[in-house]
Image (cartoon, rainbow, N blue to C red):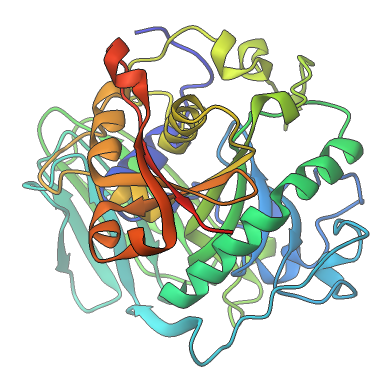
Length: 413
């Protein structure tokens, strides 16, 4: 398999969490890791509050956040002061029906993690009280968050997700134009994200491991940034890397502003609308590989997400397939839940590109709006009567050429 990008702990960390259907994980949850993509001097209120439902951002090559603005807040809100476009339109979500908040999503203290093998999960034991834990596993790889103060979840309901999807389909083209006017470099088509849910905490440590025998780690659930949370014990064999909240970010433990995982719509544009300028940029202190600045069609083929998950998120493959299936689609949106729902619950790895395409085309059809925008619709919804408001069910003839493609339903104006 061709090797591209950076083989960092964050790559493996993200891939393991996603394959375990736990969403997009941030190796560095601190909001101060967010990049100021529009050159405003700081990321507005994102540094103070962290991720919120309705946040729009670009996902960087390292899986970090380049915050733009929030579509559910007024234009004059501090988070929208510098980034929002002149013709910004606010989306109103109803707190009683469109999203839920669970302040005790994860207990305090607790461990939130996954392994590459669902038959070999993380085993958690108490050592001399609830504040000292031992985590072990016989899986070859794993990733986890240690949460001394627990975590809260913020999740859109079905109605909230529907509203955010409609808003993205309506405005994404204008968002793209506005961002392109502000940026002096290109980014990969499909890396624009609109958040529909996240888990947040005030104190954390993240870890990733690989071992040929047994992983075992002691966790001291302290809340002092000068004390290590992870303490490898004598039973551990293999490689282990960890990261924990910094002293400056740990001073305020009352506010849950560090984003552990998130779910989002991944938005792509028609290639003719996408100005992807091949300019080498700096990602923090690391030079961004030239290949990452190229359109996906010009990159070497990638057959697996094993090492390159961050640069080659599964949504990029699905969005490409949408544009290939129906020429002329202007905006396509793919939600993380769409992809997670086709993953094999017994599988230990993400499917390769061909298999992912097969699973997606079997489960979903394309719903095409009169404006030539598209989103994924479960086939069961079509059979329950959605065809009554559609013009036709079309099988795109690419299958005759041996290529996978989505069937499509066209919405009436």
